[in-house]
Length: 209
Image (cartoon, rainbow, N blue to C red):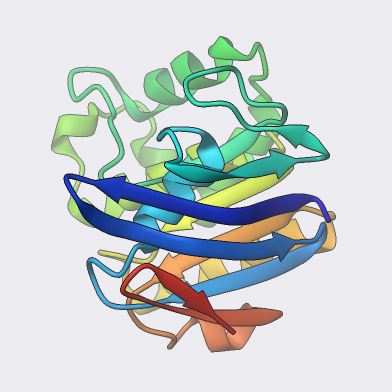
């Protein structure tokens, strides 16, 4: 199993946010996690990234443990909550800055993604001038542009119009066909039923298939 979450629990201020979650994700597949706001979806994605410390349990990626606040064992593309772009910089400047952290700027792939999402002509505009939908599309581009092996997306279609949702679904299929592991959290299963190889439900910190 490429990603393994084992007996993972998280308690915050006496409240159990994640309750003994056990789940595995294989390479080359799309997984959907559906649940209402506050059900634990976002916290599970944060757990996989090592952004939180488990109360109990563990996460591994590619057989290597994920440790809180330490370098991840794999490259991960992530959208969790609001993307933190620098508003005074252009869309392209933001992407280059993020890619340069891993020295992984692929100009051809960035151009392809920007054109797919109709952002190419806005690449030199400051992000503070972007609409909500444009910011969301830029976030999707940054999550995919480094050929990441694992892609974790929290409500990725927020603010997208119908055409952009269609482009997003096509891009997810493309990533799956390239052998990547994709986990998408959403409060509704509308688009997920079209692309997910497996769907899970999240409620009160518990994950069920």
